[in-house]
Length: 276
Image 1 (cartoon, rainbow, N blue to C red):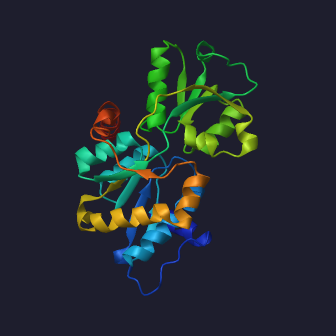
Image 2 (tube, rainbow, N blue to C red):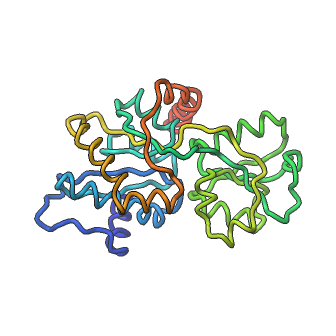
């Protein structure tokens, strides 16, 4: 997968590593696959360039086919920084000694999307229908499963897709009655796509994407804190936050990641089950 992503980076003109910088010094930024690889590469390009300049070493954006595989790779220490939702961030903190850096100011909420002019008007209309999640271990999927259970729906069949933009298109096409994604990803869809969808339900605010530093890079902690603070004030950073409606960076509050223990335990259980 790394080879594929590097190829994509080159094709998109995003790989601007000076030839004299050794590949062994590459700083790997892992981003959970909350949308397509193409969008992730474009979205995090300003951050990549800023880190590359500050650290004076090449930086690469990596992702994975789905959230499950992203968690596996992060647990195997494949990323220097892992950017992922709060439940996986908590797992990386407890099981792989990653250190939390910061998160975004904008609230993170999961949403259930349905066709704007479809037959699903209330949660009970989903009984016996196909529903979509991003992967078994994604936070929006886990929230969706809890939401379905709390509403005592029977006969729903959960299927998974790799990206929120694909999920939206499948719901619009009638391939599934609802799809679970984040509010931010819904808001980042093209206006004409958004117009064909309706938010049936949304979660309470949860811990969204968190920047987690690999413990092996602890010596870079102060430099990275300063760099991310500078990036947040830069023209590139302000444009990034405005474009993706993220509001800027903020520190995590005491106990904020610990509040995700329930969901982190579900990810741990899913990954162990897959190992058997």
